Image (cartoon, rainbow, N blue to C red; front, side, top):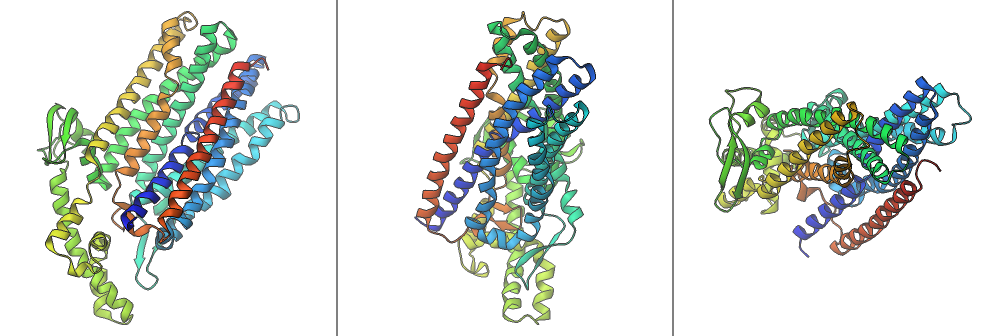
Length: 505
């Protein structure tokens, strides 16, 4: 298999392990806060049913938490095994939030989760409640630091390239932490996790109510889940708007691909509700558009354009050409570190060095690239338009469905008719897998839409991989898929087992 095959297999392996891991993360985020809310009500009211609710949903949280830890640990090791040059090039920056996550957040939640399970008869009510909230806070802090690291890949800030070490080096940890992309990703991703937890609790409660089992327990659980889920689902949509604005600021090609927008429209741009992307013809057929909507979401204005794919490719081509002198100067600096003229040229063009590196896919020396190769490298900056277009619309459609589901549930809850509404309960039960689908699609849009970059505008993905045998990657990929599938089956079996037993146990 050629070098391209190694890159694709390495990407597939990381995608597989990440998406398996993310089967467990959203439920951990959502359930941790829900059980903290339930225990807060128990401490305030002293009613045993709220303690039963906390303990039962806590058992399901614990099962899911354990599986999340088991699938998450191996991901960080892959940066050293499968993405060695990536680790060398940006490890000082990317590794910092991951280290903080392990030292601050993971140990916080891992320590207090033991007290949550074994401290019921050893701690006072208030002490145990504090423990539960610390588990929830730790879970959310874990997400924060991981998303800070991921956001730096989308919008590298607070760092510079050092030609003497051939690495990106940190200038400001504050700039990394307060990266605007990180803030938008954190609130959006965590809110999606809250929706997952709310749907999980609602769906299982609906199943109990349909069977006439644990009626009071299920009714209260459903009420909490509906109120929490309605707020969370509204937050996902509102904060998704913020994410769209961040894309326009920092990842223009991603939003153009999501919209299958080939030409820059006069502002304010329309949102394509439906269309048939045709990458071969570089157009979108049978479009149904909502006037002004994209312009308002993406630019927060009515007079700023949203660039189309063709204009962005032309811009990428210019940046590739501007980056070639930086690459040439870098080679001179490596040969002669004291060459002041080469350092000055590199400093003037270093912002486009990453674009010149795109040419390494076609030629060893970017300075020798032909116009056709430059053009091809520029088009490599366009992700799969069809995949991005349809994935995004499915994700958004599911988001609005969740709002509708929780809004109807909230109306029924205020009228105390949840237990009698069989149709709603059936819909709620069959909704159970949908938040996971939405979450996985969201990560696909975020990560696939960044291609061909491992670090946006800095390091192409094909240069980040480790030079290891493709057979080794294929073998480990098969092993991970088999092992993680077994873990997912075990997780499903244990959750199903304890749901069937019910809170009485």
